[in-house]
Image (cartoon, rainbow over all chains, first blue to last red; front, side):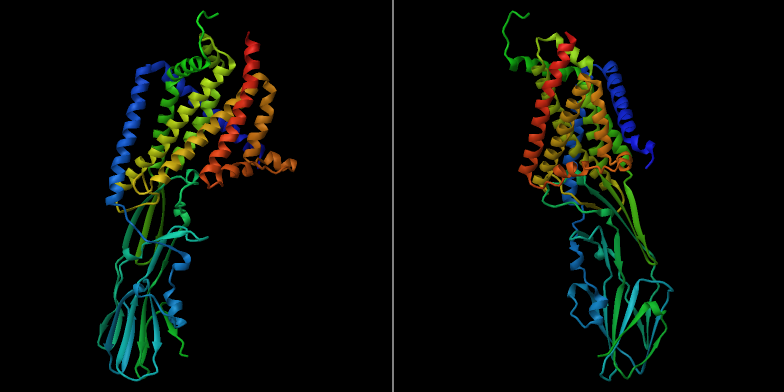
Length: 235
Length: 251
């Protein structure tokens, strides 16, 4: 830190003082006392009207999003690999499909936000079970016991299209989501029961998952890039 | 010499009302500053997440700027009330350093209440902007209906911080006016509070952060009230010493 940087705060305070003092003197000379009182009353009235309007809007239009800690986030992919139970609310749909002998897995797009988990069952047959899990999207700082906003419900889920002996991940157009947020200053929220979070804490999105359970006798032709599928190891 | 006997309370009240009338512009300046900060903060901070088939954009608005502006204003008000013009005006009344100081503290109290209430209410204006923007809106901190206790606790905290800054700066400035050399320890304190490189060079670590934490890290309402209250009372008592000396010099 240079000497100039060291004295910058003092210079800033002096400048601020001169600015405020200058404004004060200018206002003192140009405005009558009554004008000041009118400004004070008008300003406070405006703030009170804004308070009433926002209180009404807050009750009617604000999103009441669920908040979750990092521990409450469900890692569906890991749960499939470790054969753990997955909460029902993560499941979008469960379907079964009849496939005769061979199954091709493709995607119409080079890059997309879905991963196929391919599990071979020990049984023979023609029925493929498909479970589609929703992607997860959170914003805010979920670290250090903090809570993130769960926006997963706003992410559209594209279901794979089944055509005879092939399953195709269809082309997905780009979805845009815009969120505006407000929070009071952390500096004056030290006594509040609900400590404000850090919405600058970033966002986190996990891909949607298609879990396929395919009988052993069905021949597989996987035409996906390696990053887009995981083969679930057999015990 | 006054022919009618007047109690100290009456003198303080009269001086306080006089200060209120003569310093109405100080309050207007606060509102101007707050309104300017609204304009600067309305854009908010933009951030986002872009993926192949999904894009998230979010915009965060806070009233941090209004809080900072109000606290800086408090600092300047603390200085303004020690200027010779302010002090000389009180000679119009049959006043003593005690009544002069008490009237100033009454003015600080009212100014702090106005600053505290308007700063927290400024949040409503920011919220209104959030609601007017496109897309979905999240209100991270509940308002008066959703969390009334939190709402009022913010007002109390803001009032106490504003009052604390005014009283501390006012007392410092009185000491400076008593003896110009007092500016040296004050400048050193300001440098220390910013953890200045000057102290790093001297091998002294700034511990103002600890002093800040003494107030800021307090989450109990009563303890916070006691801490700020005790510090304000001590500093206020200290302010009577230089103010009496200044008066002697004038006469």
